[in-house]
Structures are given as structure tokens and as C-alpha cells.
Image 1 (spheres, rainbow, N blue to C red):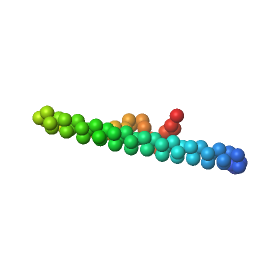
Image 2 (cartoon, one colour):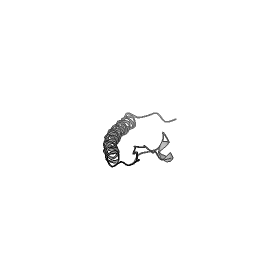
Image 3 (cartoon, one colour):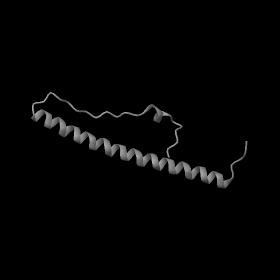
Length: 75
């Protein structure tokens, strides 16, 4: 096994930091999108009730199976 040089170790650490930051940004965006979708659903349910419709809307998060691998690279 080849020992890590300081330069390669720094690259690995930088990559890990960038990956973590991208994950945090993506998670923040997902949370914002879910909050917005829930607001739309509340409004749609209110309008359906006002119109006397027997309709109920909800938000469902669907994750493609291909995205469930912990080793999947984000590009």
C-alpha cells in the first residue's frame, strides 16, 4: 500500500470538505422545497374544501433506488 503524501492527504481532505458542503447545501435546498410544497398543498386543500370537493392533497418524497447507494458520486 502506498503511503499518503501531504499533498494527496490535503486533496482528500479538500474533497471531503467540498462533498460535505455540497451535501449541506443540497439538504438545505431540499428542506426549502418541501416547506414550499407543503404550503402549496395546504392552499390546495383549503381551496378544495371551500369548493366542496372530496379531494385531499399531500406531499410525498420519492427517492429513485439508484440514488440510495451510499457510495454514489455526485456530479
